[in-house]
Length: 114
Length: 112
Image (cartoon, rainbow over all chains, first blue to last red; front, side, top):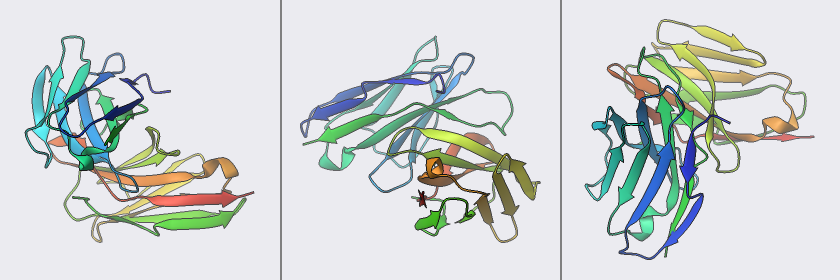
């Protein structure tokens, strides 16, 4: 166990709906990143938050948005869900100090869009 | 888009044998990391090798890095059935070391 918790573990939504996924980072970690992992693929970087601000973004449209709270927990919001948004969404936290640090991943939220 | 590719995509070996997975990447990096994933669950960090290192060991794991060829390999010695999982390499670029770019993974099956 890494100390990074995500909720919910599974979710089914209808195309066009909106969804919010939640992540609690590991104690002492102030950076949170979100990844999307389609079936059979490696995770793809969505964005990263540091001190409540977006600090880097991957190739995802604006309907993917996020928040980070003062306690460093984070939310991922996806609007106007599409079938291709069905994936495992992973949250990872890491300490700021140093560049050569590992990321600690949660168990993920499995989102299915029907 | 993926940074690079793991090779092979799938590997099946007998318990006790060694397993070698390769990873290629495209851009300059600060470090390269290997992660393991069981059955679509969260990723577990295995080992990190910095761009100025050539080889690193951790238990039954041995990682090499060749920055001139933009490639890395992960060797698992004396494999066990519990090593069955997907293995991913991930690169971290300068200035954004916590934004990882993953390969497509190697599915390792260790037969008892």
